Image (cartoon, rainbow, N blue to C red; front, top):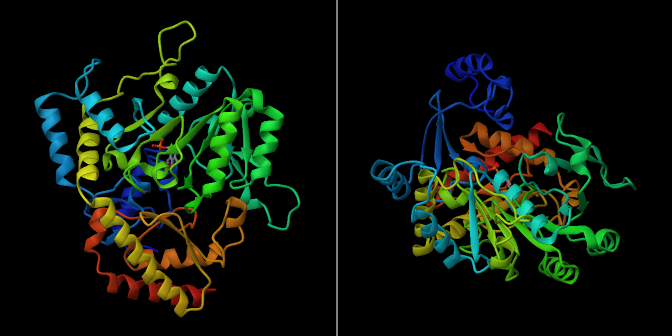
Length: 441
Ligand SMILES: Cc1ncc(COP(=O)(O)O)c(C=O)c1O
């Protein structure tokens, strides 16, 4: 997939195997002995590996890069903050409120917020706050959703080993070893856009459901999205049962619209998690929501505990302030949407040329590509798509200098810097890649 002769990358992997399991710092970065990527630099919408192969990148670190790599508007603010103020102190600065007020100006669903260092931590904080506020235990999650690497949400529908023709639903399995069965006790899983399933879960567990936790647009499942009616259903069912609606906007926040997915639906959560696009690649995350819910975080005997040594550090907050200011004050997101539309149009021309049924899911800034006649409505529907053809197409794109995840469950991420991409070149490359994928079938 990446070019065959890669002496530097191979040497780096060899060295890294001595130092880290699988030779990588995150297991998902291991792409096999021949194709694990080691970079030497990133700039704009491109990444360059240590064997000097440059790729136009649609993976964008799984979503955080919203403006572009090494965006000076952000980097200079961070340099200024750490050289004139500092990094962390274990105390507060005015920057905390600067960032919260910026978020509040973009997201009417936020009255109060707390910071975290990763999406995982933000979800942990939101779920704990929901439980502390409602004094209930159960969390309803949606098949195909992803909410980070903490034990309780590391249970997934095993759609890979399930057939559409199976009468039984996919099995729910852990993401591997080390996840105690007890962490499943309070989790219930439903297929997206299935009204009956949600009614039945509430009929069975309603008085112990603390919250529904959902990615409104599943950034980890090909951008398959909740319908407007289903999102309204979730809002209504939560209100009727005194449960909270938590929207996990770690991928969609500040990307699909200035106010995230909630601005697109016009339906608002009680608690929301943010991360990725909030800091253009700097490690910032947050959760927030209605004041009465967030005020469950307190030193009262029955209050919720939240904090952490690196919470609201100056590197993260200065990056968030700069990124959110650019997103708020410029047309960056409109530019991203236009580029995303153009790329979907050119891909569609290529697929049509080869007579391939296809559809796009989700918004232009983060769209999923599915080979099938209908946009999947949930994770089980995804299994009906020709994901093997997609993977082959994606591997060929990588071969030709276009980086993306070779799995149709990961969307194409667009950043502002993609406006510089030569779309004619991209169309040609897509055509070559599809032609080779069909020949390989
Ligand atoms: C929707 C969603 N929630 C939570 C997470 C976890 O975020 P992190 O990897 O920053 O811990 C992710 C990561 O991809 C995500 O997409």
